Length: 352
Image (cartoon, rainbow, N blue to C red; front, side, top):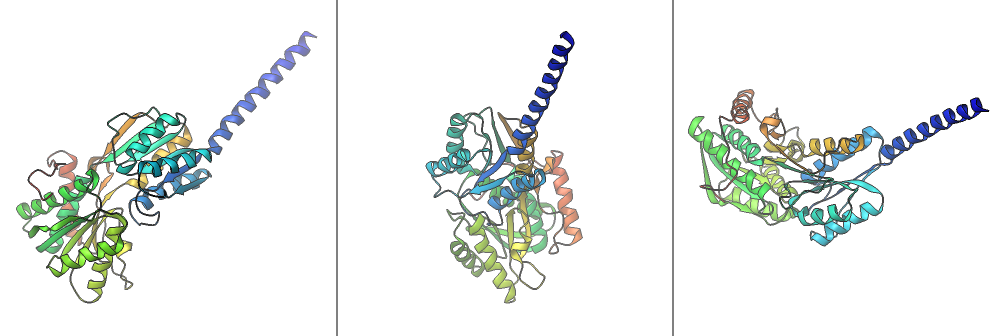
């Protein structure tokens, strides 16, 4: 009898262990990965698209369900409603790309303590929840390298800037770009002018027509290259550059967030994208989604990434830049990485 009871206990423990293991696996497999878009669309070929591609890559590799929601608008209520909708559908990891999510994420992390959230482009200085990761980039470093590359490509001429909303991440791209151009002028033999009238914020990340209109005015005024840090509005700038190059004008656009070379494809095997000031939004979204699925998500943290981390810069290769220019930019990147060059993240002394 005792042997029978002992055997039953052993079997019971084994079955319990199997069920416990199975439950853990089911929990992992059942994790749903979601994203709420910022201003703009999922196919903006910039910030939203890059973030979603990172989340979806993780989902595809792990065989997990993945989706996104586009809010009805860009208010805190709109964002929070979208987050809540995903949560109600069983999503326990949600990526929120953009500064405008600050208040919505602040509220959501209190409302849903079991929800893993990442917010990109804000440090959540008012308080990061235990299950929230805030990620920011040193955009000024990426902008700096794009400025150096642009100056070396043009050698002489004029540059401009079209931003989206006048928010820290966009401002830092602008300020870094100006410093990079100035560095090239002072150290690399270029002569590039920057007029304050050609540096502007459109107030939108989703107005393609406005971007094209602003670009038209700048190119007509003699600007040779425009750095477009404006999401979908920036695509309007790129389209105008594309049209002008196709008609024989020697003008360029500089992309943002991701390598936008393909966005500037002119249909003849060439692109109007001189280079792009990149930050690895897809990479960080992928990393955090994988961490959430693998049980290694480190909530309650702020991560800042830049050139030294390999998470900000310009594309390693672009057919519109010579190997010599790419090598010179790589040398400048190394100086930033080792602290020899410190790029300021404020507008002091710059066109704001």
